[in-house]
Length: 397
Image (tube, rainbow, N blue to C red; front, side):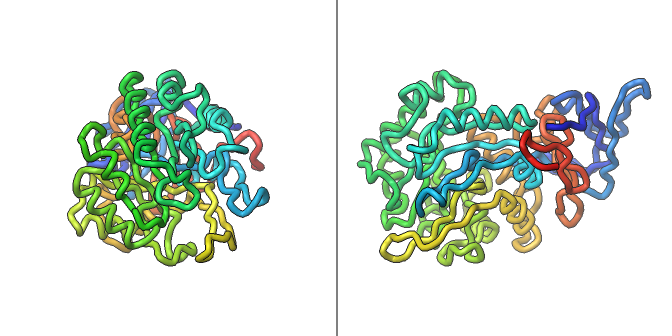
């Protein structure tokens, strides 16, 4: 890892979307924190300060990607289809400054302890990383022996997932098993002051969200304890997810899933956000994640794997841009979906997900065409003029 870092950084003349529109302001960064947002800010010449003129550019919070396969995923097509670990610059050049890592189908040759080590490594390299304990199956793998213990005892564990439901790769567990693991996560979160959320993978099964309604119908477990993801994978599931969100639940669309990527029955995520808003879903109940570095297996009608790809994290930046340029969604709404909304549901707000005094200095600079120009993660300048300037330990310069 190499760094380009001064204690003070001053972003001048920035059009700040915090995510509320603050107009043209200056932002002073001190160490890893935002020290001040205001007009006409300056420091005496005695201080070493990196000054960046942001005139004509948007400045927004760093993206939070709540669904990333940090140590790879997949394997549904055999050992050779296990996807590789993600690299630091794959993350930062996508505008992402905080990742939430998880396992997927494979909880045997991939391990939660390895996922935790990867998250700590990424933190050493400059970004912020948390993880979910578990994988597709129930009972799900953990470090301490239970989801509740992992959440309470391990600082980086904020919940459990991704637990598979309505998918031929799930453990086909009964309602009570899903209910129990959700309750474990909830209580673990309560006792540790964390979110204790369940990242719930939804497949193409015909039951859709039926099980989620079953495990929350008595009111003891709130809908917001569960983050159903991949809801745009087919039109039927997406329609159900809209109703779920209108009733107060969360709907997480996957930016790497689209007809263009090979998911012929899916709804492109920027279009999905537009349709959800038009259907009456509150903007605060929509999130977007990339499924970055996960496999994108292709199955035939008999369930046989006939191909595989790797989900790219850059899709989250592309879909953010398309929300505004193609769907005419206001930037103040589009940015919430990948910053403040996620931070609030995962109890990282206001340290993450916004630009405010004393929040972490996770900052993106975008030109008026919404092309990424600069990235700061915890006050370190990671991307400059669209190119990475800080690299992971084993990345080529």
